[in-house]
Image 1 (cartoon, rainbow, N blue to C red):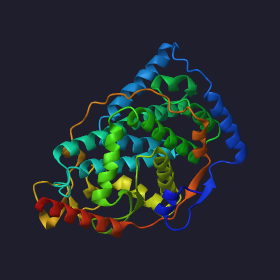
Image 2 (image 1 turned 120 degrees about the vertical axis):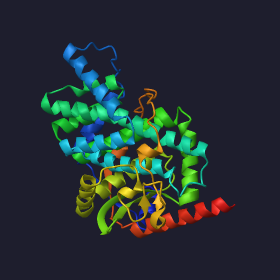
Image 3 (image 1 turned 90 degrees about the horizontal axis):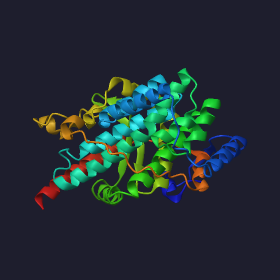
Image 4 (image 1 turned 180 degrees about the vertical axis):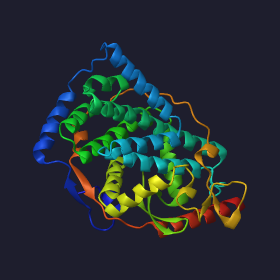
Length: 372
């Protein structure tokens, strides 16, 4: 059974769940993960020139693609198109699109009076820092896996070089031995959210910013939505599905939300096909005009048809230098493995009208704030 928070999110009745893998395989994986807790990490490895060249190549490619939300979002999609068995990369692409929307919302005409300049900058730096940290952790793993498909690689040997949690070594080994996309996706969701909590939110000022962001998004928007455009409702207006998320500061809730979004994207053929078509047809710019051109415009020089100004990411924010976070390993407690047991079964709900109403409410609130 899901936590009360998610039962409320999904409706009156508790959501059903399904095991990710059978009990025997879970027990085997759990045993391998338990051993990791007591294995010292060897950071004094010597690498052959060919290995050192591979490590340098992955570092260079990851840094180049980690330049901003646009480059990250495209990198996730390009990787998924090459490796469709890695479901997480498609999910990451869609969540990263939403991250870009949230970044540009801070400069939209609907937020001109709700946040001052300093608050916008702080919130953007938080969103950008979290985006960057996840990409820096996840993308080397993806590239190592891709290289392993061409030439057998002992991933366990390379993961510590990129400061990847020891949690992921048995997961990748298991996936290479017997590919299971839901297990790998769930493990990556767990890893990235636990890493974010341990390295960023606990040890930097971003933890306090997230709590403020939670509060202010609920104050101004009621909720924080992650949306998936999946069908053309009308010209310039895509139908949306997705989730409404409250209190995003809790890592356990972020993990459960990630699982729900994964289920929504991959359990429903109409959503999977529709979102896939959208990603092929509409390059990510960060502007909400990408999916609702009837409502938003990225052209800041005009207010034609009373559209809401939603800038592209390149117009809204400059690229930021990325500073690697602390390298603490979050995997210190075997209880963290329990999130690998099951996935929720989630119903698709059309959020189009609800999101339209939220947009109108925000516009009204912004206008009222300008008066008082």
